[in-house]
Length: 149
Image (cartoon, rainbow, N blue to C red; front, side, top):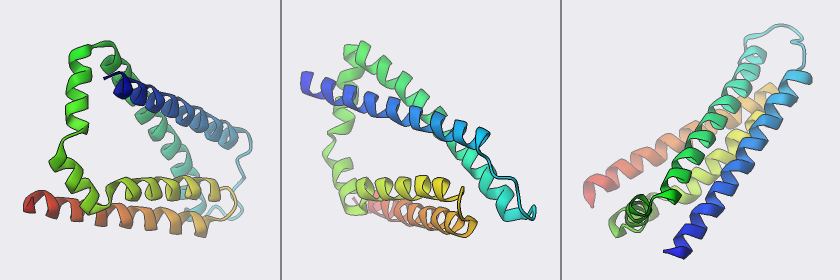
């Protein structure tokens, strides 16, 4: 159980780093925000998505940090989380639907899109749409495997 506890503590550290990254993106956006050249819809969308995505990611990171802290303090919750993460059926479903890598690549694409939004709107929109399509396809595959298995 101590090994799992260390794993959760590392996960908590990564969430703290994510929250700090989000704060940096928000500060960069507030102080170095470009003025819209032509006031187009796309520029407003990209700026809004960057702030909204940053705030949303920050909130998810904070809520996950609180949840992990509560789990680490209570031995019963720690045992339940261990059982949930080591459920063989759910592991097989995640593996068949490619979830671990799919979530990682989609998150990387969204973050890259948020960063690219400061430089090029087309690249930002393309990355965000591609990540959304990738996640939707992953959810569909996972739903199919949940029914089959």
